[in-house]
Amino acid sequence: MTEQDQKQLGTTLWGIADQLRGAMNADDFRDYMLSFLFLRYLSDNYEVAAKKELGSDYPDKQDQPNTTPLQRWYDANPDDVADFEQQMRLKTHYVVQPQYLWAAIAEMARTQNEELLHILQRAFDYIENESFASTFGGLFSEINLNSEKLGKRYTDRNAKLCTIISKIAEGLATFSTNSDTLGDAYEYLIGQFAAGSGKKAGEFYTPQQISSILSAIVTLDGQEPGTGKKKHLDSVLDFACGSGSLLLNVRKQMGAHGISKIYGQESNITTYNLARMNMLLHGVKDSEFEIFHGDTLLNDWDDLREANPAKKKYFDAVVANPPFSYRWEPTEAMGDDVRFKNYGLAPKSAADFAFLLHGFNYLAKEGTMAIILPHGVLFRGGAEERIRSKLLKDGNIDTVIGLPANLFFSTGIPVCILVLKKCKKPDDVLFINASEHFEKGKRQNKLLPEHIAKIIATYQYRKEEERYSRRVAMEEIETNGYNLNISRYISTARAEEEIELGAVHGELETLEQKIVAAKEKHNAFLEELGKPPLP
Image 1: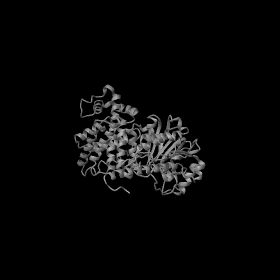
Image 2 (image 1 turned 60 degrees about the vertical axis):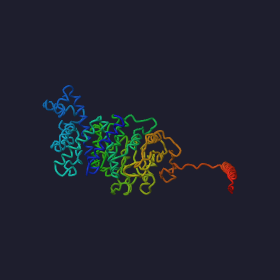
Image 3 (image 1 turned 45 degrees about the vertical axis):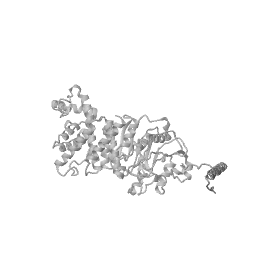
Image 4 (image 1 turned 90 degrees about the vertical axis):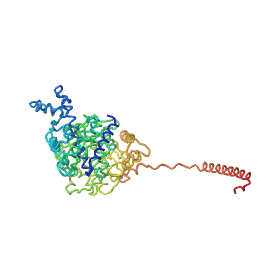
């Protein structure tokens, strides 16, 4: 599928959303739209696998176009269904019974079947609790099929759902439906809904351009980035994963089998569900990822709080785009928390360093962490200065990257990327000032592929370039009071061009002579015309 087709599919689906949501706000409608897209993906993937499994026994689609081939096989072979589903669980990791397949639901919608809403609710319950070996409880918890936003009476709600599903089915009909295509459409819609959500978008969406930078950095060899990408990652963590796009970008860098397991954490229930759907929709098996619903700052994920060091989880790569300058309420007991006790607590007004220290605590010895933060972390004083100073003295801050302003849906402020390592070879800090390298947009600025490639190559080969990047010795950083403000180390001011006074004087004399000659010529014309000369 071409990039143009992908964009067209996304635009088609967004047009449907815009046309049909009516009085419903964009965030609510997003959850319906994305859930139906997810059901379509599960169904298509399952039907392809079922056809392969059953071979010549798979019924011809043309026999009875109003029922799915799989339903006809189930009806004809009731004694074989249990064995078949057991095989499908082994091969595709999940089962979707025929009555819950997208094709069956879409046919009910097309014919305005009055039972659609009931069947759809049972389908969601089935997928949450029975489809997968591991249950996905609450996956559709934010989808209220009985919401009055769909209609006041059951018949109104049912009719509205019939319209929405029929339109989506029509919109998808002319496009390829492989996992990459639907995954791209899902990501496109998340981006479109994020654009319409303003500040709330920061809860679930990291722009793809920035995701690409972070994922490229953490997948390079931690000790010798110049040697290229790591062959394999045992694990990757995003402790504020939103819709999971950043984790999927890391997976894309490494390839489908390049990471043993993906871990994410998200506190917002709606976004947590989006992330789980997003993983499955991009072909990540349920055994290959784990997303936890909970508060990162409270560290309420039991798997991470393992007291036994031998069992404690460490991650080869850590990526994050946590909420900027988030207000939190650290307790006195948190001062003894293993994540913070050697550094001190971040101030209540800004949890930026609390998030950073959380991720850094779980970073493997040879791993790489890349985190997006507001510029304030580079220079603010007080508790943040103490944390920053210790990280610098311990040699844990590897690179500071300044990005352009207005790249995010949620804020116009410029942000930075901090790259951290527990063991790093260079005894300096690399500063990259990419703040002036972007394409200006109407609503948002954009990093082009060449801008992204330049940042990654500069990090990878630790290159220095005037007005763009510089390796700064720790002695210089120490003399600056461990202030990491990029402008202290890389000047973006252009040197004024030197003026050669002799040359300028010569040019003025030449101009004066030309003026005199022109005046004499003009007066000669006036004299011929009998007019008085110019003074």
